[in-house]
Image 1 (cartoon, rainbow, N blue to C red):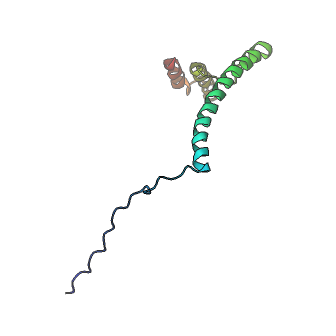
Image 2 (cartoon, helix red, strand yellow):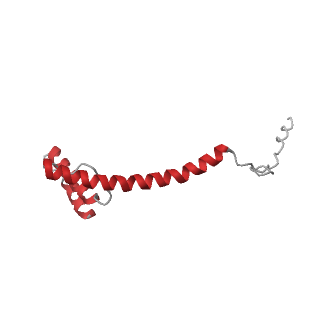
Length: 107
């Protein structure tokens, strides 16, 4: 029998970061700013949406007699009740019963 072939040579570990620190490029600066600005913009957008949403829902309810349609922060229970009513309407009242209980439990 022939001798098995020798194993492949082992690689030496190379550092994943270069020895010299990378200079801050325009791309890395913009990526860092975008991460900060993105979070700030999202927070401001939620505040603005809540402010406008409350007013729009009040106008829709008072003038047109409709149910609120613009979800705002903190109305999870009302949204779950609305979902349960919609499910009961489409399932004939029996299929949404479990959802209705779950909506009441979340309050």
